[in-house]
Structure formats: C-alpha cells, structure tokens
Length: 170
Image (cartoon, rainbow, N blue to C red; front, top):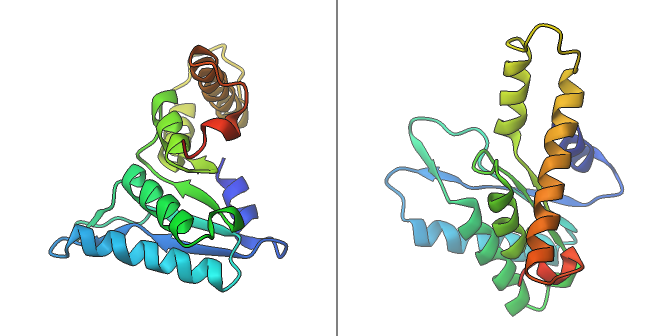
C-alpha cells in the first residue's frame, strides 16, 4: 500500500529520484518521453538506485505519459546507457488495477508498482461494506495484493516462466 511507497521515499538507505509523468496539455508527448528518459539517466549517473515514476497530482491543465510507455522508454534508455542494472523502476500510478496491467508494467521493466487509486477506492468502499463483514481496510488491501500476486503467478505459469525476474523487462 502507500505506506510502502512512503518508506521507499524516506528511507536513508535508498537513494531515490521521483520523476513526474505529468505535462502540460499543449506540450509534445515525444519531447516529454525524451525528458523523463534523460532525467532517469542523469539520476542514475548521480547515484539514484530507485527511480519512482508517478502520475499522481494530475490537474485539468495536465495530462500524463501512459505508465507503460514511460516504463518501457526508461527501461530501454537505461539499457542503452549501460545503467539498467544500477537502478530499479517503481511505478506509482492510477492506471493499474488488474493483473494484466501489473503483468504488462513488469514486462516493460517495472520493479515494483503502487496502484494508489485502487488503494484509495478500497478505502472509500470500506464505508459501504456489507453488514457482518469484519474485514478491516488493511485486510481488504492485503486481500487485493494477494489476489494480484496470485494472478501474476498464474500468468507466469501459463507461459512457462518460473521466476518473475525472467519476465521483468522481457
């Protein structure tokens, strides 16, 4: 959940760099993709071990680079620069809620994913829970996480991959 993201952001042991996927409505998408790739390369060269890309904070004057496009572009740019093994890509996005979304992001190079809008939806639905349901919000989020993990495992087993790292960035 989001507390894991905050821990990554604030732990002294991790040298992180956050890169926003947001840009203005009148700006060029291809230039923005190049910019986030350049920013990622620069961050890793400066010692960042974790690149956090995020679409959080969108307004009516902004649009976001789709996380799949951003993840793949950064992943391949870091490979081209010989830096990919030096950093993890963490995706914080509202655009990921099903096992397929997770699998695609992992396949494009994501090391970890925080589906913040899904967790927010789970929190909001806590108030609408059925009478007699004794699950806490944390339990609901853990159930979601377990179901996503099981779904990814099923996807991997169907295509004959036994280790997630073999799928990441493939």
